[in-house]
Length: 428
Image (tube, rainbow, N blue to C red; front, side, top):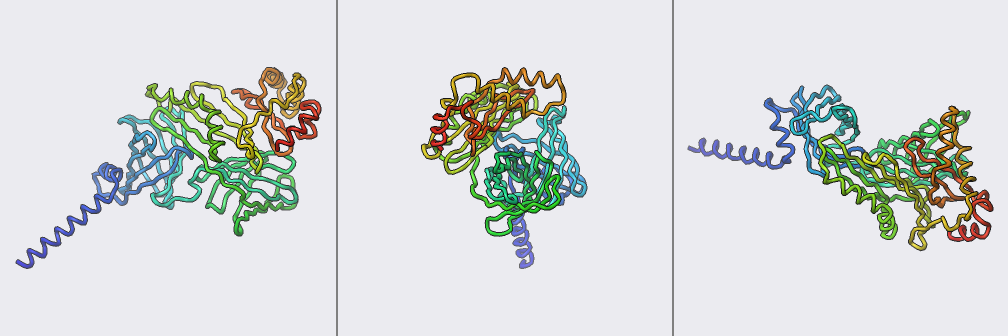
């Protein structure tokens, strides 16, 4: 009798333990395990962002040959079935939506991280994603702007990076106002690889002590190594609004600086956001048939003012729209530079001549077309930068966006009268 009672208690204890284990697993993990008829080796859940913006979860299980699971979009709640194989670290998956194939995924599963490259069935759309095993997040998962200042050899430089997850895009600004585009990959929050997209060079920037980041590298055409030393001076949060579903992919990425700036920027893009919202109720069966994006590029950020450009594009409007902004921090308001410009059209011609001179064209026909476009293109309100003004045209799907920087000494008298120039510089 005692033996029977002991066995009964043991069975009950095992049942309770198994029940507790099942309940501890998430609903997504339970659904994933139910995809298998054979015993599984493991089930894992990953979290991260698609294209560095759209929050998603992936749950995968593996039986030694087959790898199956689900991808869950946080904003819309939609789920996609994933079926395929895992060989070593290489993932090959077919994505299904409502039992129909919707995409192909190639990826890597390594050290608690998944990297995915997705393509739609017709290969008309694609995205990339990096997801980390649940409860294993890097600091760089936050969307933010990192601002550094320091010296490259004997020249002042600033580095501004807009980061999403483990990637970043931004500008390297030199003391002579030269700007180069850079792309950053974070190995860790204190170790990043910087690729200079303008010059083709690359270097590794490492946090060597306290707030100092350093690098030594040879610039193109140089015979000796250059030394770069940067201190991180600012970190700005980004406000990211996103919506990802089967047919829609909308995102808004803007800096969050203070209440006044945030409200001013929202006012600038109100009509764009209304247009995006109106598309959500329109049905489409195609994968990401509707896509839109609103984002910004920061040109100058200091104690006195913030300047940059806000951009917008969408699949239903082929043109790239853009708006410049200059925000005075002392007065907590946006500033228009148009009143400082001279009334005649001569200054516009002078600015466009500078844009033409800066454009390197090899094809005569292209040069003629570019000149015709420049002559017709509208100049936007210039941006206040350190050392002068940045002028930009409205964006064009063929020629992009022309821009030119004009230093203070070159602005007067052709573009701005001496009196207005003095008044403008005092606003700084």
